[in-house]
Length: 432
Image (tube, rainbow, N blue to C red; front, side, top):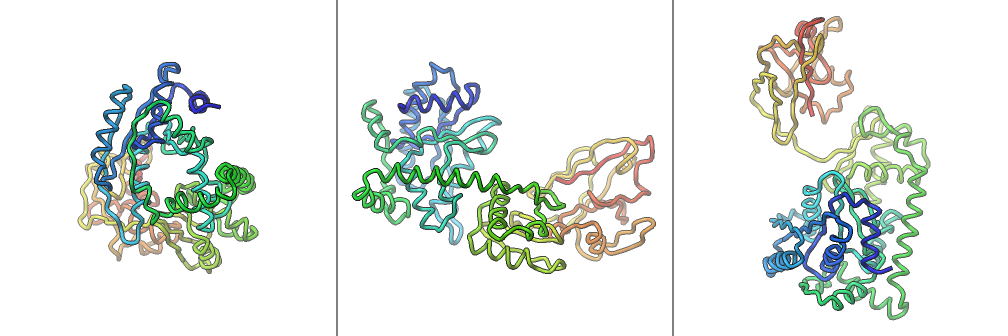
């Protein structure tokens, strides 16, 4: 199959009515993909758009951006260009940060159903498997890069994954394409470059077909991983809270299936995978903790917490709730930057009485009491225990006051004295 036929096959399979975004750096691989899409555009009447991200890391980055603009103008290919300002956090890899931010740009630009095209090839696949092998990855990591996977609001496709880099370079020379060379690709201080320039050539000197052989192993690992995941249903392990797992159900699994279930669950929620050591800690210190304990394990901005029988996965954030009360007329959503949105939806005979002109929104400071008719008066903390609100969520639950009286804990409690009567207009409050 030719390069052009391979790209055509992916487009036809994915649908000709979708928008295809071509990740175009200006290098030889992405230039080949861009040119192939240009050749297909008129015959298949497909909407292609190129997208170039300037990371600002190389002295020639501005020149590469200009080159991308010139090439796309010559090909009459729509192009979007985005410049990044990377801020490296302590202990973070610059290469990993650049990749993360680049894909974040792609994700923001993709509408529902769009497809992202990247020019990864068979050599990239072999390098990825070897990198994962050096990290001690299991079948999931050794599956390397899938040809097509869900991404953002659409899909991410690698139509050239079955072709060698030599095949792409040959095409580029035949078509007399002009590309830029990133000199940082020769820096063997980066693990991938070390594998590319030292490890793979050495292996190829002994086994000439090593690249397609490694790529084939990756496809076998992907098949094995698919079979493993087919036997693990996170739905059957679901806890009482949204996106949680039941600790009791997890502990009923053999240890190897339990670890697989945890990895599958974490990936299904689009969180980074923890190391094998972190998984062991989750198993030993979180799952096996006493029911009245609330242990947690954190990694890469993610944190696993336990509350009663629920295992919950969250992003680590430091809530910054307003200290001053906020007066709200409930006509428009109340937006709290970085925290959430409080909405009021009109109803009849339920919710907060619409006769209230305004309410005051506060967040827990400590010392609040909640009086439930027929039940009595108790501290806010005690009521949260009764309602099953985990401790890490309690500071972020909006408290609705009329004067000095707490009339609603959004999502959990409503004072009947302020509730809409039958036939009366009401407002249902929702915190997102």
